[in-house]
Length: 116
Image 1: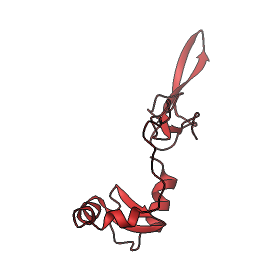
Image 2 (image 1 turned 180 degrees about the vertical axis):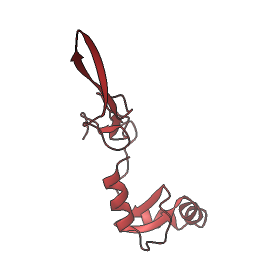
Image 3 (image 1 turned 135 degrees about the horizontal axis):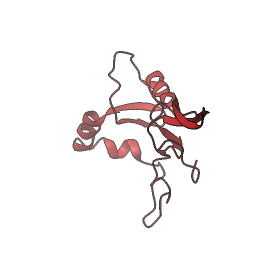
Image 4 (image 1 turned 120 degrees about the horizontal axis):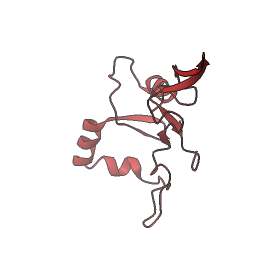
């Protein structure tokens, strides 16, 4: 979702040679693995004990109405395109210059103003 999170994830992986494929599960700051490793741990019955004592979502609780719990939304200024048109007036007519949007990240996303 954001380059800062990607860089943080890469720094947390136990080996720089591990591919940066999502999802990745971390429990109590320890890298558990990707989807295949987590599935294997679940099938072996080893995932439950890793998660014991961690808080879980309560049934009936609602996530953010703005972003659905994703924490990011498409940019309000450029609708996620990362481009905005700045108007330029010249000799009785108006032209637009396409510029990089300054409000969103490299993916055209902004933090949710409701929950972030």
